[in-house]
Length: 380
Image (cartoon, rainbow, N blue to C red; front, top):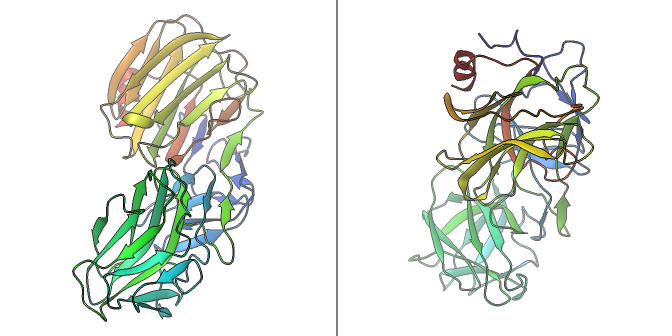
């Protein structure tokens, strides 16, 4: 049966250092991945805390509830909220006598930096000091970590485009709102149906262009950009097989509106010779195989939830292609061409660009095809 012993490349996210993500196979480290990200970034560590990792260190993220880490890769984003962990600053205007008390409670990163936000005479508590911080016609997302105080309800609003209410608990949770405002806008934080003196706790605010919240980008005096994550391994033509094989991954998209999130084996040179599958907008998972620019096999499916982890495998051999998801063979093909000059395994579209934007729990490659029984076992 297909298992660790049969695979030629195996990567379960675990070992890491700067610029390196370790694979469990081959044992000679010839398939350890190269990692590039030119800035620090945050992950959720094994203790469930927001934790910063240095430049070029791969992120092994526990996503609050996971018992094992997944490799987290994101596209570049900028947090436009200055002093992300301090709401008593010039980014915010306090409304109708509301107050902010900094360093009031242990924050999601384990430090004593949580903010106590207390209502004044109006249920509108905080408004961004710039009333045109969000340009019209662009998708923007505001997110923040929130925790109940002596009330359990708060709301977010961007440029009066529709207030969204949230129920808070005694655990920190990250809440978000995404809007395309019709005019240059601002962000409001309100406590609906509350009374003067009632309060909640906030930490880690983030304002970013895009249709969903990316992981927290820590800021102090200025906006901060997090670089995109690049993970790949080249120079492995001796492991990859142009004639036949299986590419497998257990992956999750960060959002159904996210950009494509591909995993590929390729020549690394151009569009013409590569195998890839990816999650995409509208809840689709696609698979493609190109040989000399010819599309030998392609298929798309939208009957699985890309926000869940899905086990995906592509078998390729001349006249014998198959696409498996979560224990089910969803498509087959009889294309006769297979890619030429396979040399790179990467979290991108096969020749740079189109970088992966999601999480991966495991990645495996087999340089011979597997039986249907083995593929069912592998993807179940």
